[in-house]
Image (cartoon, rainbow, N blue to C red; front, side, top):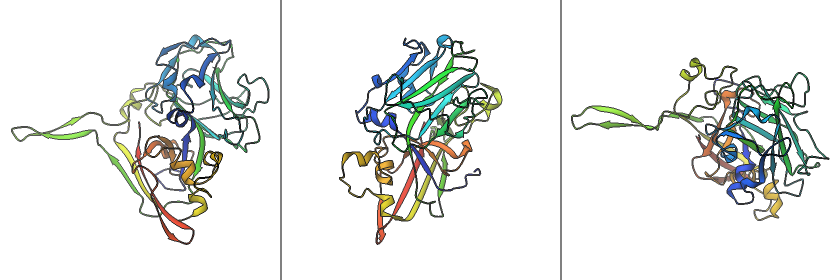
Length: 348
C-alpha cells in the first residue's frame, strides 16, 4: 500500500538489541566467522555495529572474505521462548556485492543437524527474491534493505539463527566489492488487533533546525541535522540497484516522521497477559500488546521496525520508530475492553 494509507499496523520488535539491553546476552553471543572458522576481516566498523539499530552506522566486510556466517545465540533452551518469525537487514549493498543470503535456525551451534532453512519457505516481503539457482537462497535485486517473515510454531530447534552470506557465483568466490551491512534485526512481530481510529495524526518535523535572530534583527537558520543520514549505498529505506548515484542522493527525504494513533475497544485478551505476573516464559511468548510490544521495546528505550499496514510490500510504509510517550497508556471503556494510544517518532 502507498500514499501513507493506514491499515492494520505491525511492529517488528528486535530480539537482539532487547537481549543486549536487559543483560541476557552480550556481543560475544553473536559471532561473524568465515567458513573455516576464522574471524571475518572488517575494512570499516566492527561486529557490534551490526546490532546497534542504526543502519547508517554500517560495518564493511572485506570482499576477500568469501562465504561467512553470522550466528546469533538466543541462549534459550526452550523452543517456545526461542521463537522468532522475521529477519530484516537494513542498509546493505547486497546487489552491488553480488551477495546471496541463506537463513536457518537450529538448536546446534554448529548447525550440524536438525536445521530448518527458513529462507526456503519464507514470505519475501521486501527486496528478497529467491535465487534463480536455489530458492533456499535470498538474492536481493537491489541495494537498500531486505525483510522476510516465516511461520515458527515452536516445534523445531531454534535457539540459534545463522545467516550464511556468499557470492552468487559460488561459496569459494570473492565478492566483487566490499560487503556493507547497516543493521540486523531479528525477532517476532506483533500485529495490532485492528486498524486505528480515524483522525490519525501524521507529522514531519524539521526539528534539527532553529531560528536565530542576530543583534541587528536579521533571522537565519542554524541546523544540526536535516534528516536521517544516508545508508551505505542508498538513501534511507530506498531500494535501488544503483549505488551512490547523484539522483538518489539529491532525492533524499528530510525531516523526522511521527504518528499519533488511537485504538478503541481493544479486547483485554489482546491487550494484556492473562496473569500480569505470570510464569516467566509467558512474557516472552505471549500474543498480547503489553508483553510483545510495550515490554519488549522497554518503553521508549528500544527502537523497532514499524509498518502502518501489516500486508504492505512497499518500502514506503516502513520505518524505524520509538515510542514517543514513554510506554503503555490505556483506559478501560467497557467490560473487558480498553482504549489505548500509540505515539511514534522516527529513529535513526
